[in-house]
Amino acid sequence: MTTSPEQSSEASVGPVPASAVVGVLAPWLPTQRWFPVKGVATRIRLVRTVPLAPGVASLLVDVARATDDDTASPGTPLLHVPVVVEPAPTDGRAAPASAVGTLARDGVEYVVHDGARHRAFWAAVLAGARWEDGAGAAGGAPDPHGVPDLAAARAVAGEQSNTSVLMPQVAGGAILKILRTVAPGPNPDLDVPRALARTGWHGVPRPLAWWSVDESGGGEPVELHLAILSELVPRADDGFELACAFAGRAASFAEHAAALGTLVAQLHAALRRAYGTGPVVDGAWLVDDLRARAVRAVGEAPVLARREEAIARVHARAEAALAAAGERHALPRLQRIHGDLHLGQVLHGADGWRVLDFEGEPLRPVAERTRPDLALRDAAGMLRSFDYAAAVGRAHGTRWAADARDAFRAAYRAGSGGDAATPGGTGQDDLLAALELDKALYEVVYEVRNRPDWVGIPLAGVDRLLERATGVSGATPSGP
Ligand SMILES: Nc1ncnc2c1ncn2[C@@H]1O[C@H](COP(=O)(O)OP(=O)(O)O)[C@@H](O)[C@H]1O
Ligand SMILES: O=P(O)(O)O[C@H]1O[C@H](CO)[C@@H](O[C@H]2O[C@H](CO)[C@@H](O)[C@H](O)[C@H]2O)[C@H](O)[C@H]1O
Image (cartoon, rainbow, N blue to C red; front, side, top):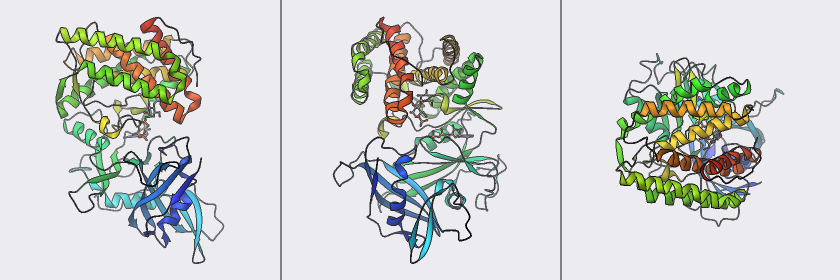
């Protein structure tokens, strides 16, 4: 797929026009995991250049399908691309891993680096960051305005939606998350952990500082967040990798899964303390929304088409369960939730599990990601994740995932103790099945777009859910 640059700014990065830098980046951008438009030819347009230091800048580009008309539509993703431009080494040294390409200007050759992997960019961001009141006092941080020690800093391997940099010697241990697809206004990935940390809950790494630019264009200030620095969870295992390793050696994950169930119940309680509890769910609205999302998923992933009838039956069962709960005045209440909870969003450190990444589902419109929702949706996301770990870790049979799921569910129910937002009761299984199905359909679309080889994993989950709820077999092969 190609990405062609459109040039609309005279700004420069060091001695090089920013538009020329975009020209170097254009073929590289679509190859990055965090590039938001997949599978179609795109065109990028430089929207803004944010200079940070000589030769160091953040470029904001919008990404449109090559077939779209000239004006960026409201849904066009805005991408944050940090760059460092330096004269090319003349001593024959090999280009570092951060180098994206070269260009010549006035007879001098320059290297364009991916700033997210370059120390000059990291230092410039930390110098321009706003520090949380008291940040560092507890963590033994240096003066936030002093020179940070970046000698041991390194980008996290296996990046996903964003690019994160471990900084073990900054503020007692920190991680800088460089946000990639950005939008003006409040950022839940900063605001939610701040709010949770203020409730005194330690299940989330504490945000230490953030870097944003003003997008108001002269009116009321509007922040556009570009990077967040958080407390590092030292020697932490990624939850997904840990679970896959357990699955691979046929070791029970039930104890870890139970601790996760407790963590998620605590998370929901802390979110209620921070943001309060909303009204009870409007069952008719919820089921309409599930149906609409399923229709969109089928549209994007035709492999789902022959399952439509069975999907409709799961929705009908959830509808009946919600109607019955309404009659018993037992409908669950809405509240702030994580929104995209899975094993890759939790870390296991010396103090147990911590939860990360409050951006919500990246495929959902931004406005939907922060709206109050059913806490049970997060539980459904985590349950789906045990299936993924079983498939990727190559667990034998279905017992491994079933044990993890049971342990998680039992601990989550015990931890949320029949409160209004997460009721037990007869309808909960049908509602949970519909939410799990919703997540599995989302995952099918996610995998079709991002990891087509993995689409069999959520598809097998879809079929299991359809079979369990309706007795209709989908007969889909699974495995990555
Ligand atoms: N506070 C932290 N301490 C240690 N490692 C972290 C921390 N936050 C994130 N990470 C690591 O960085 C990875 C990506 O973080 P995440 O917030 O999930 O980013 P993304 O939005 O790119 O998915 C995590 O899987 C984890 O390995
Ligand atoms: O972590 P992100 O916010 O980028 O979430 C997106 O990507 C996830 C994959 O990286 C995707 O999660 C799916 O795959 C995980 C294993 O890689 C698995 O643990 C999850 O259960 C599964 O949903 C997530 O759905 C997507 O929003």
